[in-house]
Amino acid sequence: MSKRLLALGAILYFTGFVNTQSYSYAMMQKLSPEQRNEAIKYGKMGVRKEVTEFIKEWSVDGGRNGFAFITTEFLALAYAARQAALQPAELTNFEIEDALSQSRGKLVFRVTTYGNTMDFSKENTAVIETGGKTIPATFWTNGEGEAYDDGKGQPAFIADSDFFFPAEGIDPNSRITLIIQDKDGKAVAQFKFDLSKVR
Image 1 (tube, rainbow, N blue to C red):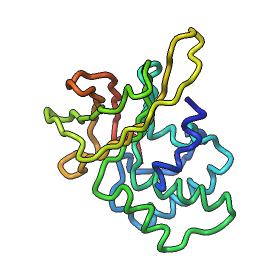
Image 2 (tube, one colour; image 1 turned 135 degrees about the vertical axis):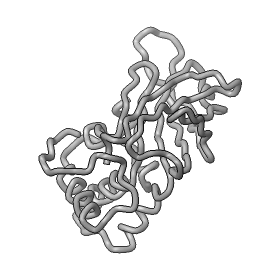
Image 3 (cartoon, rainbow, N blue to C red; image 1 turned 90 degrees about the horizontal axis):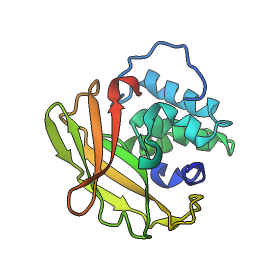
């Protein structure tokens, strides 16, 4: 799975180290100038981290059920700063606004799942359950499965999907469950996020 996650630039064209500064731990939206600076600082400090470690705060590892992470405005900007620092370069104002726009007003998830056919995820969709509400994704893309060795000699594929939801009406301090569904509406994977613990 780590090999797949090293290519996360596709969604971020979109933690390993401990930060002791004080944060308002709720999913950050419409970042203040101070929060933008903190995101850029986080990105610059993370240049030597593996991507999986860099996004740990925003991710849920479901083991054999898959892996998912949420791209908040903070993470989108931090990742852009990380990529710029690898050049090395400083982000321009345009690049900062472009990074923030990718997640502004939305909840954006990248999900990695497993199956036994190349097109196993082709018709998957997703919903969020929170506060007694069920919210369907408004847009999604499902990548084609790629073969990998599961060590059992059986057909095994891994695929990435991206799901977009409106942020309006979702409490940034709430707990949500992201449910991946097949074409018949059957849940094939679930990931629980506590938005109060991500920036």
